[in-house]
Image (cartoon, rainbow, N blue to C red):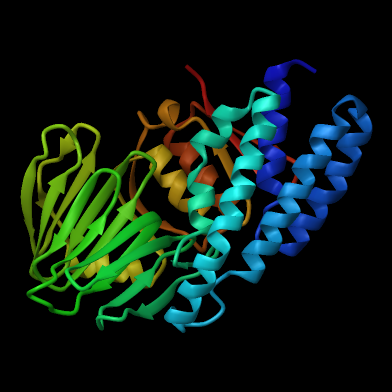
Length: 329
């Protein structure tokens, strides 16, 4: 086996051995043991990876959000953060030994998820009341870190989607921070979707001041019934938003796609299903999708519909839990 194939196999094992569903993990364990027998030359490296995977799974169960007691949850998260970060370092060194450091670097958000203050599981939506009285709902497989002090209120969206109804505090405006922008609440209700390289704001009531994190530091105020996307190039043009459609889609676990990059759609779909979608983000970002996607629909059916719209897609299953998606050039 060449180094490239080994990197790919190890990356997939890391994903499958940390599945949320216990049956998926058990099946992955069986297949992993058979894989080790076929490749005894990598026994030491693979055993280290397995130990890391099992420890991460135990931590996710032990330190996960089991209730809406935010103070207790945050305390547990802080206690576990150092241990998880130490595991991340071990994982990085392990993958470095087989030339897979790029995989870990690219997927460091996985480890940020484990250290988040509040998070949801695959397919789960959960609501919380923050210490300032703000009401927030996290979409599937979403995570945030809270930075509330006497002089500021900031929520760092680690991954996923959030719906927030902001409690008023004139002395401490609330900011939703993403890698692409800061969304400063000047009103109450809005939705933020975080993708791999962009974030999107949907304004439901009042307005939000959006400041780009790009070199331009562009600033735009997004009003009720408007939407905007922030990425590495700056801020998009503000466009109209149907508030009833956006509200209904959130409640019904639907994705409203309006010329949405296929890679971003797959990212969101992956948060609702226990199967793992593996794809090249940049390669699939040039394909656009429009329509209403039901995240509770059978994933195979959804992918089949996407293939009708984009026949150049190749979808291949690797075992029962991993789906590899590519496109013909």
